[in-house]
Image (cartoon, rainbow, N blue to C red; front, side):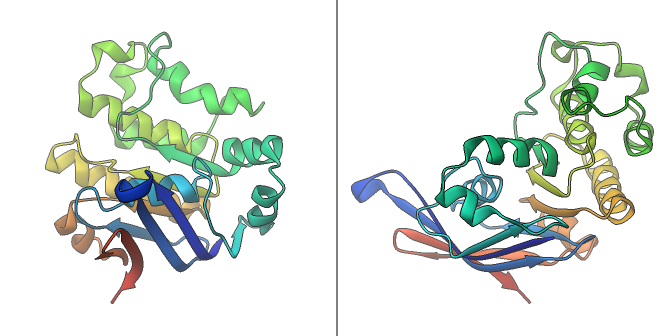
Length: 232
């Protein structure tokens, strides 16, 4: 589902530059992995590069999805329309700030990815997620009337609404109380399994990661560079 080798992405310039390196990552269909490390080490940068929001300085191999699309070639040829189509259809994002559109009600925010792709409005995965996260009373509200935690729960449902092949979640439980954080993790694991997705989840909540037995991609910090490697 996801196969990456030799990824290097940098932020900043000169003495302020910080490199983030991923030598190898392979995710099978239905597999979820946590990305961990101290604040500022580059976890979000890594997620953005994998999510095609940042162009890497180096990339040896990148295949995505059941069709094993050659992402490295698309990047090398600067095929922006094809990359945009890949992001919108194959990837699902959960951002730290939720990223909901303030002028759309909750139900319309959730449905937006499906509408943009011309998919039917009904989705068993969405209905299950709304039920598990208890979002029914919020569907006709606007984002500004929600708490931060409620917005994050809605953002998680929107991220899987179009049933992407790879889910990328940046601190999805940061604004949630322990009970809802656990419910959200349970939901993510269930949907990844049922829909045959793969998922990468950035998280500081190591206790929750350990509770669910998620394998980790951990940060190894060096001078001016962070390398992410599987932790045993």
